[in-house]
Length: 369
Image 1 (cartoon, helix red, strand yellow):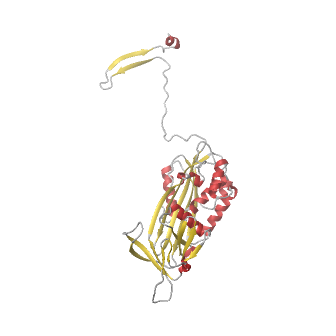
Image 2 (cartoon, rainbow, N blue to C red; image 1 turned 45 degrees about the vertical axis):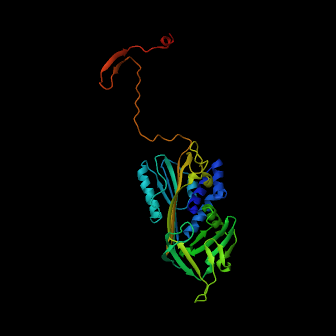
Image 3 (cartoon, helix red, strand yellow; image 1 turned 180 degrees about the vertical axis):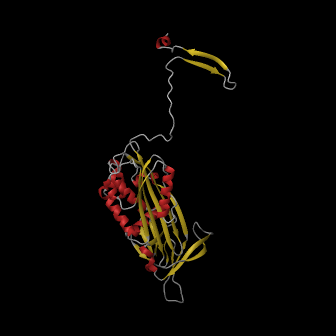
């Protein structure tokens, strides 16, 4: 999950929303909606200053959707295009944008375009770094844990800088943290908790550790034994006088797709998905509601470096008005308002069983009799 790829989009929505939807988005981004767009631009400018990060914002809208220039002015420079009456062609263009902006790591836009979609706001984020000291590839047979008995592709590295590893004391439990330094000012922190800890708890606690909210102890100051998950401190005799930190980590490539609307409260999208009315007067005078919010993400940890990419996209349709019917059809009105005939026909043989003529319709007085 790339929070940095979703947060700026939510911030820009918050600045343009009203009512309860504005409050929920404001709570989700954690700041006043009035200054959220400015903060989003600041986040994107941080990314622009790094040679290891590539970010891009995309906005596409239907030509018949009037956008407020003041809201557009809050967005950073990016890709602005039009959605046509051909969703299939638009899908190909947006897919190509996602692929180009992520160097092929994300091959398509997470959204599915239809003729109901009036606006798409998307962000592409890519991080690529090369390790300052590379790992070596290998294969390891794990003896303990859920991978016991399996041969795993691993990466190994020995360093004399013991403090690259730390043990953190967190409310969720002890965490072992490994800092792997890369080029372009990028660090990758690997976070290991006890096997009984839930993934969400491990990651949340790890984020707090990186933010400096929990105390940590450098590996060089830890006592002998097992001071943290996955860590063993031993005193041994060696031919060199230097202490050593030996790291073994599985090589990995993972990919995932997230539907942000599965957790609407987390992302502040509970109210603004109500299509019976509009929620973003700051974007357009035409009522708009969010109907799609998705993110595709991928990450690779290899011997030479790390790369990750995510594309987050939000799709909005008209709110407060009935959606247009999905099919173009012909309507024919036929009124039997004067005398007409009838035939009774056997379906299989087409035999005409009876025939008649209706010269006068049955009126209300006859029905009452």
